[in-house]
Amino acid sequence: MRPGRNHCPFQVLEATGAFTLVEMLVVISLLGILGVLLLQLFSGGLEIWSRGENLRAMLEQGASVADLVSSDLERIQGSGDGPRVEGRLLAAPITAPGLDGKGAGIPAWRFLRSTSPEERSPASAFPPAEGERKNGPTEEPAGGGEKPSSGRREGGGETALEILFPFVSRYETREPGVYLSLRRGLVRGNEATPFHSWFSSKPFSSLGDLLDRTQEVTDGLLYFGIRFWSQDTQSWEDDPSEGGAQVWWDSTRGGGTLDAPQGGFDLDLGPWSLRVPWDDVFPRALLLEFVLEAPPGEARCAVTREPLGADSKGPLWVDYPERLGWKASEGGFVKIEGEWIRYRELKGGTMLGLTRGVRGTKAAAHGRGKRIHVGWTVRRVLLLSHPRSWWGPLPQPPENKGG
Image (cartoon, rainbow, N blue to C red):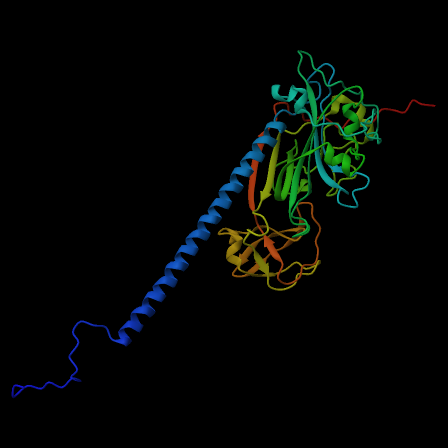
């Protein structure tokens, strides 16, 4: 052993460039925080992308439905368009036996229109129900006397009757009264099933008959409606009694809307007018409006913070008001369960200026935590090619010359 050297086997050498335990824990904590932030950022981006895809799908669905219905409405046939066919447009509630209240007074739009070349093939018509009744629906239209039409027009064209109406949605069990489906039926006139019989208040004999003779156009609607611009209309938005558009319409003015709510049809004259073609009226324009929303599991909705009574005029306190949309502060429409409510403005989480039971619904009580639906509104104005107004004095009913 050389003198002057320490050869202790337990000598500790100084470490150079290594991490201490505290430094390792700090680094692991920072990496964990960074990972959580990145995960939240990714999840947020994924949610935004998913909402964008849902919105794109809704817009495509809305455009498809609007194109289909608009194409049908633009071919509405006016009175006197053909030598053997008298046109008619009727917007009025319908009923059917066996609907157990689901079809009682549901709004429907029925009109005669020309058919496209594709629709003239036998395969395009909706199949008749089993046991087709030879005389059409059992109930005759009010006033009677309308001449049945074969549906054939001069020049080889063809006329069909179309019926549109909202019905129960497949989502009914998840949120009763909120969602609707839209059904559409196309009927060809013939000697066995004249057109006039389909303008009664009971065009279908049963629920099965209704489903057999119509097809679903779309589902997931919050609202579907058509309004009519008459000779007295000044605005689409106002009440008909204040110069607004008509909610109901009967081109014959023959009493077809007598059972309709909200005042019926302002230009109606009564059942006697059904037999008088020269006083028929057709709107100058139509406003097609419907509201779409994502399915119940995907829709992001605000909720009620406090209960709302059936007679309450507000205010309505809301949780998650940011989900009502960026223009909610300017007012608008919302749907809670089966009721549409119009509000004047939104301040913070409070809705002010409530108008209850609009868009053909009735005011009802709503509990705490109920979902508030807004949806995406599609509106389209259509001009008819044959508007027909009556500007003269109202005609008088014919004298009864019977014994």
